[in-house]
Length: 64
Image (cartoon, rainbow, N blue to C red; front, side):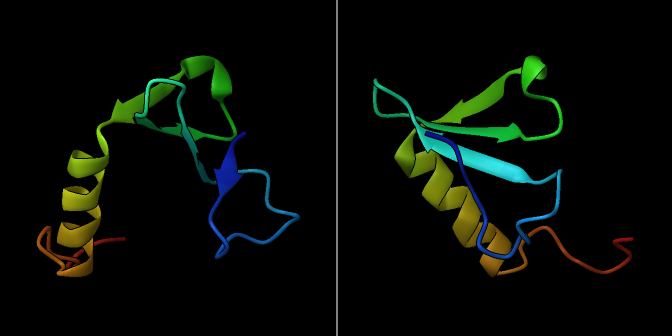
């Protein structure tokens, strides 16, 4: 079952969604275009990515 961020409003058609796959990976996809598929990450890789975002490791300066 796909779940979208609680930051997304119910009326919004487009958002990032996630689900746990049968083999234990975390799938991330675009709700506007599910036909494009999803990226799948190990829980460890996903946790590392989320931690880097929280630390602003990618730098938010200049982001549109």
